[in-house]
Image (cartoon, rainbow, N blue to C red; front, side):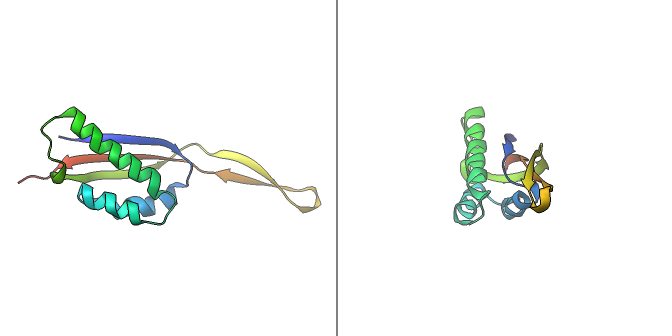
Amino acid sequence: MISTAHLRHLQASPQKVRLVVDLIRGKNVEEAVGILHLTRKSAARPLEKLLKSAIANAENRQEAVDVGRLYVKEAFVDGGPMLKRIQPATMGRAFRVQKRQSHVTIKLDTRKG
């Protein structure tokens, strides 16, 4: 039984979010929540909420699911749309600032045995 949760338009670059997602991929759900709770990256809080949402999706989808046997089967980050802004510079110039966004997907499954 696979349950998924999606987080779209996270205001953080995919490169930075992938650093945090790599920490929890393949881990048990309780261990992954603990890792995200203690991680001091800015993307850790939204990812913790997303993981808890995936756990709730699994519980709502099937009443008899054992949360202790759930693990993070897949977790990946895709790039979202970029907000293009202008940063004023000296001598009348302007530099473009690209504020990157991320789309995160987490899939949970139960361990066999």
